[in-house]
Length: 388
Image (spheres, rainbow, N blue to C red):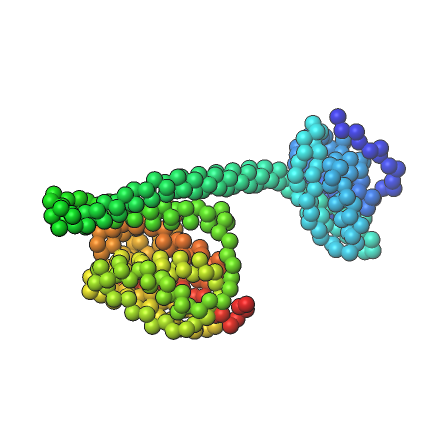
């Protein structure tokens, strides 16, 4: 049972008919106290909230019903009550059965008719116990979900790593088969009979293996991005030089599909991470090549606009259906469409680009018209602004 403070001897307080009207008419728990925080009036709603009868509350000090850790809050508010007529603050009350009640005190002065010092104070009590419990449970569920996502991403990274080694062995074997098939038979001076089909099979296996390896690498990078395990070292790099390295890797595939990559980006310094910039450029150009029809052009341009370096990758390909465009940067709906040669990507490329670009302080946008091609623009920080 809660030990109550002894009732102090005090003069009668005329706290005005206003206080009585408040107690009679308010459905919200209401507490009226004098200047010494002694209870002079309560309403039935407050009695029901705390589990006391009115006679057990009236005449007792307010602090007798306040939890220990909230008493300093109440005393501090009482000290400034003559400075501000209305105050709102959180306290924890203790019910008659010892259970805590989280509440908001809306505390107002009841000024006497003769003016001068306020004889009493009216406190409306709002029970927020359930709200606090719901917020606590919600925060706990969010933490549990975040932990589950982190564990899933770690597991995904481990699976990707375990898949890479055997897949690399398969790719190496198919390359050796292709080389052996292409080599002339020393006995006859030409390709061994009956091996032509092996070369075609090896090529199919190699293409499928490379596509799978790209998907695995994207999944691995995506999982590490979600775990913030991709450190960035921001430095100034010359965009044209980075592009040359990327184009040397992608041009053989573009030539195989009779696609011309036109690079109109001149020397232009940008602030970014070397690996992140290379990954973003590679993904965007690779996507443009994949979705462009044979004999078309992929155009690369860049300009300094509004204090940002805007890189644009434009293709003349299939375009993106309008119903897919709002979901391009979301992982939940699967919207990956087949490329011009029927190859289907994982849909992670743009997500990875967005994550990396934003970590470098930039932004990415997609402009597309079904049947009219797609343009992706990346805004980066110029190398002359804050660079090393």
